[in-house]
Every structure is written in C-alpha cells, then in structure tokens.
Amino acid sequence: MWNNRQKKIAVINDFCGFGHCSIAASLPIISALKVQCCPLPTSIFSNHTGYDSFFYTDYTEHMDAYIDEWEKLGLHFHGILSGFLGSPEQIHIVKRFLELFKKDDNITVIDPVMGDGGALYPTYSPLLAEQMSAIVPYADILTPNLTEACVLAGTEYNPDITEGELTELCQKLSQMGPKKIVVSGLERGDDLENFVYEAGKQPQILREHKVGPCRSGTGDVFSAIIAADAVNGVDFMDSVRHASSFIAKALRRTVELDLPEPDGICFEEFLTEI
Image 1 (cartoon, rainbow, N blue to C red):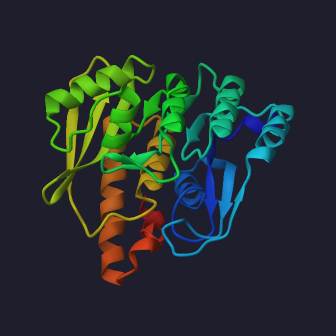
Image 2 (cartoon, one colour):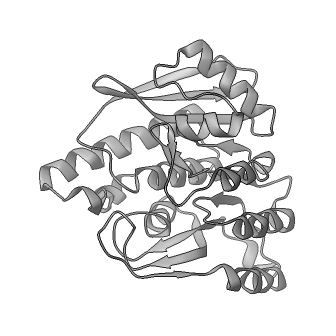
C-alpha cells in the first residue's frame, strides 16, 4: 500500500510531556535515524513519576480502538518497539498487537521495563512481571537490565554476576524467543557495561565510563537507537556501540549543564550527529 513505502516503527510506551523519557525520547531519536516513529500510548503523564507531583491518565481503554484503526489502514511496520507496560490488560493488548502486526520481515524489540537494582519498581507486582514473559517470545531483540533479565529468566539477582553467568542467563532468555539480547547498564566500579549476546556467536562486552548519576530516559534512548538501527540493517554489535557512545556523550553534556537528575539527558543537542 501507499502508506507502507517509508520505514516505520510502532512504539508502544507511555507519553511524558516533560522528563526526557518514554515516547518523548523515542520519537525524536527514531526520526533522526530516518525512520518514521508511530506512537501507541499506554498512558499520558505531564511529567514522569520521579517528580514530586504529576498528572496521569491511563490509556488502556482506548488502545484496542486505536490499534483497530491502524489495522484498517493496512499498516506494515518495519519495526515494533515495546517499552513500559503498566497492567496485565496492557500486556494482553500488546500481545494482540504483535499477533496482528509482527511479520516475518519486520523486527520486534522488547524493552521489559520492570525494575532495577535487584527490585521491581513500586508500580510493578510479581504477577505483572511474570506476565511480561508472555510477550518475550515475540522479541527478535531483548534489551533488559540485569534485574529484568533475572526476573524473566527466574534467576536470582546478583550484582556481581560473572561473564559466564551472564552467558547462561542470556541462553535461558534466548530459549524463550529472542536471538539477540543486550543486558544493559551493568555497574563495574566507575564503568558501565553492556553484555551483548547473539545466538551462535561469542558474547561481547562494551564498556563506557560512568558519567554522573543514573537518569530517566537513558533506557528509552538506548532501545530507540537499537530499534532504528535494526530496521536500517546495522550490525547488532555496532548498534549497541552506537547507542552506548551516543548516551555517554549526551550524559557528559547534561552534567556540564548541571541539569537536575529527574530532567533526564539532553540528547537533543546531538541529534544532528546521531
């Protein structure tokens, strides 16, 4: 169809008006990489929950009708990127979306946003985390942090996990479906590591010097670059290197500007270089 001539990625995530995260981060990143970003909002926030106060509205009851209109248009997505999901109902809706729009010739990236530091986020229940595994088999690429990887694999969290243990962890996850996995943001002293796993290949580690405190939105920027690069045919290892170096550069500039931690990272200053 006429509307399938341009590369497109459907991005399923919440929308935050302020705070450099979620769809507000994915949309400019994917667009700068010359792919059309088509957002499917799961909820709408004035600003993310790291601030003392925020406005929030749940979009769950509208998602099916929204998806139905895309189906009527006969849209074909070259990529699908799923981020934070806040309820079992949303997981069921995303599963339906994947059954409708995932094809043999497109790429699905699942960013299973559930927790960090060995614990689930306060809004996430163990039941919800368990149900997240229902959409993992649809993933071509999975981008968890260590906490999320352990939850999905049913493995005890260990911040001092070894390279061999990471390989075993990724092998478990790969058996669920995804053949490419990056376990992101592993803290190693003053450095952050990304553990890159591709089925049938030797795992590799990419290391970047840690810049300032952890900030909201870095995972959204990371997964957006991974998704757009995949659609553009970039090698997976090169894509992880691309995402890591871009985020490090944006973090250094964010520290220079002395932005408050909840404000996220000022990636806009480097979009022309992405």
